[in-house]
Amino acid sequence: MAMAFKMATLGMIVSDECRNYFMEMKRKKVHRYIVFKIDERSKVVMVDKVGGPAEGYDDLTAALPDDDCRYAVFDFDFVTVDKCQKSKIFFIAWAPAASRIRAKMLHATSKDGLRRVLEGVHYEVQATDPTEMGFEVIKDRAK
Image 1 (cartoon, helix red, strand yellow):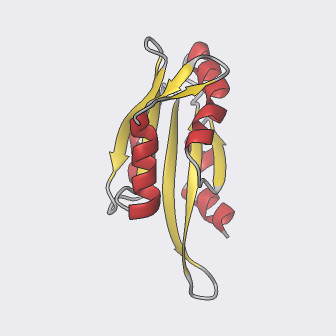
Image 2 (tube, rainbow, N blue to C red; image 1 turned 60 degrees about the horizontal axis):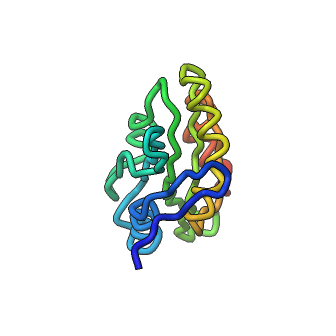
Image 3 (cartoon, one colour; image 1 turned 60 degrees about the vertical axis):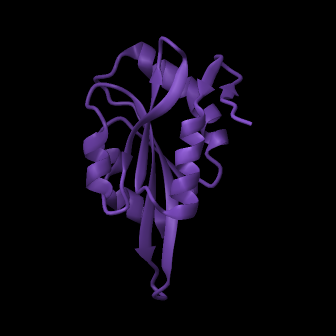
């Protein structure tokens, strides 16, 4: 049964493709990252960009606009001190200083609804500039 997920707070709808792409990333490892955006007119959270398995964190950061808010998930692979291969999924709430106030408010109030749809996220990072979500931040959180 195809059904979009409705966010209770604002009547915002999370499109089915958001959950479907996330499940593919989580289970099949076919996406390294997914960027989500809100279409303010239709009040729908939708997939904006998808990074293939060979893409990296720099590709994700390059996919985020300097002047508009986005959500993103990133599948971070790393090796522990015990030489174990691990993977952790990060949720990133991107709200750059140059974005419109309305966009920032909409993204802040809609975030939890999207997070509920994306089951299996390990860590969350909120960033208003690139330094707050730098690769070192991700590495340190994943330990």
